[in-house]
Image (cartoon, rainbow, N blue to C red; front, side):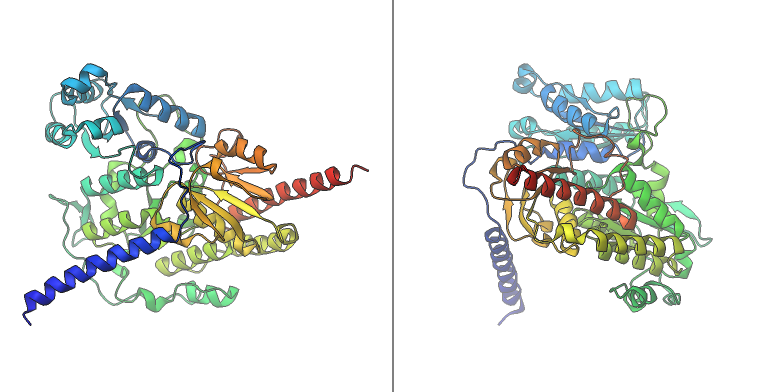
Length: 517
């Protein structure tokens, strides 16, 4: 048998295996037969991409489509963050669609570059322009060639981010925007003096590795033995993670998923800094907590170009959320920086794992403040667990947040009866629930004690006669969500208490209705 024939058969076998795996994954989740969506859980991928670009300093996302598409996205983002949102539109009309929208796109970009001088312009497509078949990519390439080289009107980086409404959802668009930023970034490489020099083409040589670092006596392994959890062994970092010479830079990359609040981004940065490391967060939405100064039509307070350039010289990359896994892999391909995907940061085991990873990277023991926070969390879990027992909970969230939420609920002894997600993603198989459904909020039926969803789930909670715990996107029926820490020991404890209080009120009200006396 010829080797070429073997190669052909092997390729065909891999295709069949991939097709079979996809069919098996699809069959594992229940999808409503009706094509009608009532009170949909799914959001446009353009909204996700626009959200991600809010975390890039000086960025301006432009949705290439009708004005209504941009208006809806801007309303949802503004109501959720309660902050001015940088988002523009090409405002296509019927004649633009018929005659071709390339000229309208070029004029819109030129106008914003001349008046506002953005550092980054993200051109987000819509269902209208994708179905029409306009060559948006060619127009963006022409604009990018002019502005990236620095023309008379300004020097802006123009990016093309395909976000059709009929493909993917909020997480898809968010991840695609982050991947596009990584793909277009000009990363720095280490010089012989351990400084940073720019890479002309962005494609870096493989990083030289020396002897692996010796784990600190109180690093992740010791931390795991101390608390009885499975941490990260120092041997796992051997020959695959950064060495001493690279760790002298004391910087790690954080790819933050869309399920994190602005306060969560700040909390992650503080955790990293407590281990003596610097964090480059992409995208950095921490400034959307109300701390921004002044007014601007552009995104402010996010990741800067200088920080993006330094990502190639970091020790390690942490992808927070399964959605950020492909972006971390792409970053490794371009820079050689190893990465770790952390499914969630809420819950005892998840927080323990983060502490172990940071301890292993920094070669430093876990700070005493986090040991104290852990003891408080364990005590709080003991106090509240009686109110979680035998409770039936339904969650309707994006996939990454559904994974994180189902895991900390499992730690409290609760099995999620039903999990509703907007679409099939890689994270869907990691949700710990009795039943996982791809659908909308109207499709939720059954007897539950609590509904965990975004603010659009209010009517569903009333129909079911249960309280609503608001998380995810968008949250606008209650105040303070963007300044709420939901991760780590401290954030997990606050969430556990908040949900327990809702369950107590539900239990008390139920008894009052059953026995008015």
